[in-house]
Amino acid sequence: MSKDHRPLCIKERKRIESLGGYIDDGYLNGQLGVTRALGNWHLQGMKEINGKGGPLSAEPELKLITLTKEDEFLIIGSDGIWDVFRSQNAVDFARRRLQEHNDVKQCCKEVIGEAIKRGATDNLTVVMICFHSEPPAPMAVERPRVRRSISAEGFKILSAC
Image (cartoon, rainbow, N blue to C red):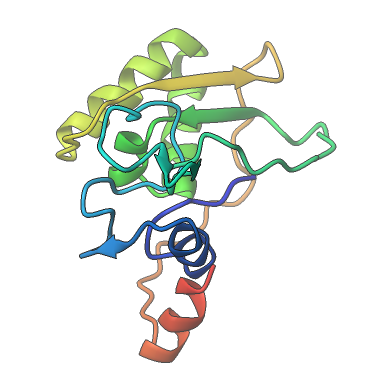
C-alpha cells in the first residue's frame, strides 16, 4: 500500500532539488535518510529555503484503496522500522505473531524488539490496525524461500521508483 520516500528515489530527488535541497551520500541535505517526515524541522535548511517550502515535506502521498476480506491489518512505522524490515518481511513477522497470540499491542512491542535485534539505530514507532478480531488464518501454501539477485540494469529501473 505504500512507497518509501528515500533520497535516492529519482522522483523525490527531483522534488528536493527543485526546492533548493540536495542529496549527499544518500541523505537529504546530508542529514536525513528520508524525504518526508512529521518532525525534524529543527534541522537547518529543511523546512524553508528562500521563502519557499523546503526539501523536507510532511505532505503525504495519498492513495485510495478499497479493502477486501483478505486484508488483515495495516502496519504504520517510523523510518527506523523500515531501515531494518522490508515491507513484506514486516507483514510476515507481524502475521506470525498475531497467529500465535492475536494481541496487537504485544505484536507492536515484538516488532520493536526485533528491529532492535536487527540493529535499528533510529527512532522506532509502530502502529498496527487490524481489520478483523480473529487472528490471521494459516496460509494454505507456504512460499519456499528463494534467493534472488538482480542485475545492475534491473536495480537502476527499480531505483527510479
